[in-house]
Amino acid sequence: MNVGQLTEALSASAEGLLPPGRMVTSDEGDGDVQPLWLSNGPTTAGLWTHLYAERARFGLWPLLLDSLDPSDGEFRPWASGEVFPEQMSSPASHDPAGLLAQWWATYTAADDDVLDTGRRLAVTAPFGQAWPGLAPSREMATNPDCLAAEYARAFLADRPHTRLGLIAAVSGAEALTAAGWDGPCNYENDTAKFSAIVRDWEHRFGARVVAVGFSTLHLSVAAPPSHQHEALLVAAEHFAFCPDNIWQGSKPHTLAAYAERITGAHHWDFWWN
Image (cartoon, rainbow, N blue to C red):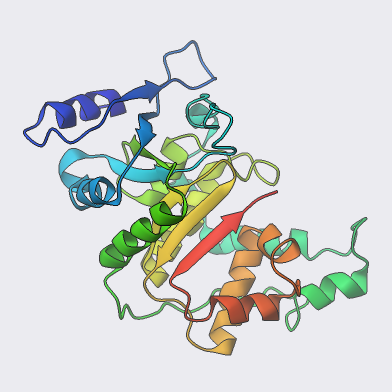
């Protein structure tokens, strides 16, 4: 069943849960590509939490959807149809470790017009250009689903304009590709590659995709790094995944400073310029 059929089944169920909304038609194709359902107005933490708990039953993954500019009325990229699922490959076809190593090599290369060699290597110290490998898996001390619900409440309290999106997917990582989201397109057009990495984080760190914006991604994390060395390894993965988190995040723009900020943090937020 596609998203429209699943959403109709949900609406027709005894729950009577869904607020007014519509299927989003992608800009690609002939108007027949509709990868997600979008509520017409803001959603609530209670609704998201209920649909999240029932995601396996309904076959729909709920996402909190943010906008590029909530005041402009377009609610981009979702209501404007700037989603491109047919351009994406499959997350299963990509190796997360290989992708991160490849991107690390690219972003730590010295041939850059903005940073000279010394400054660029200082950003990623103590690793420099040498890819340190993946951080080890962490034991779950907190229930990932309970933490996702807590983060959803906090996210909505901070961004009350956020709407509900429903995507036919078995995980939040796969929902990113199925929805046709292309937030990191300035670095890579194939969202399936990012989905492959997020899916790996779901297993290693108890990450859950809670919210997505025009070029932002927000994850709850049940098992974040707890000490400096482990946090540095996770920070290296984040740099390869989204270099703007370090290059354009809070000062100082170094891996070590970023690692300190994510130590023990139960949510990871990414922004691609």
